[in-house]
Image (cartoon, rainbow, N blue to C red; front, side):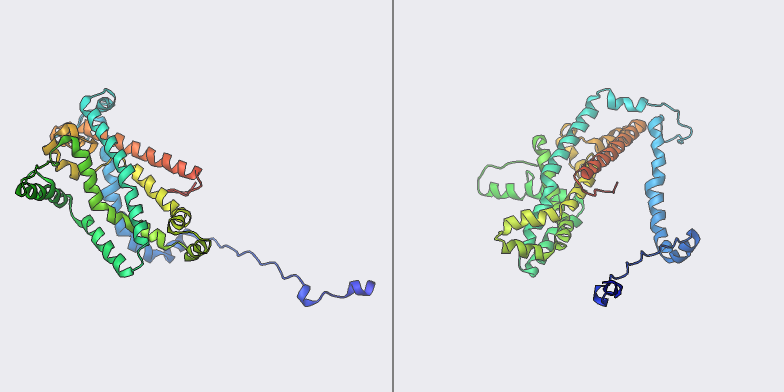
Amino acid sequence: MSRLAERPLPASRERPPAPRAPVRRSVKPLARWRRDRLLLLLAAPGVVVVLLFHYVPLLGNVIAFKGYQPFLTIAESPWVGWDNFRVIFSGDPVFVNALTNTLIITLIQVLFVFPLPLALALLLNEVISERLKRTVQSILYMPHFLSWVIVVAIFQQVLGNAGMINAFLRAQDLETFSIIGVPELFKVLITSQVIWKDTGWGTIIFLAAISRVDTSQYEAAAMDGAGAVRRMWHVTLPAIRSVFILLLILRLGDALTVGFEQIILQQGAVGATASEVLDTYVYNHGIVGGNWGQAAAVGLTKGVISVLLVLGANKLAHMFGERGVYQK
């Protein structure tokens, strides 16, 4: 027994040596700068542009606490403290109307506009012919590159009182209808314009996310008898859920911005009551009306609320196990 115990185990039964953990060597900051100096030089122009045009102008928000006038410098303008913010909390009917319109348009666009790119991406993903898919994508993307001036002009030429549709109805001795210039239909009109212009472009991100889904999952689901709808519900949507939540968080951060240029171009036709939003309120009462301090106060408050919306939505995403905009 002792001799058997002293015999060494066969080579096949010997345990392999445990792998050694890689040794991490700390790189000194100066050495890191030298190593990455080319990348830093390439990134420097972009960093300078962002600082000059995005962060330095933030210092101008100080006029929200001053009685600023253009003929005075910011330093010479008198300090008024929180007086400019009274328009927000005093129940000013013009501001309340702008805030109400902004929230209604935001709710409509989040519920009806935001999911459309996902639905369109899912439909395009089912197209078998790649040539047909690329052709449809190109056609749907084209309106995104048009300015709002052109988009508004196209809608006026088609849906206006003297537009193409009414001209055809008059030629057939039929009753005409008017959409352009009707205050009750203004929110529906601008929502349809956003859908026509940006839905195709928004499908790019969702199509890119869908293309990363492992095809073996579709094959396994098909072998189990899952049809196209069940494959989409149980494979595609769970795989792109994180992308959907990320875009939703970013959309909530931009919730109080509903399109200044698009609305200001059509505001004269429907009036301020139906079309005034926070962005146009800042323009009309700040730049045009000369209430620079109040306009800055409204804009600053809007920015703070947008940041809080992003942080809250991101925290909610963490609670559901998603990464969100940033990790914990």
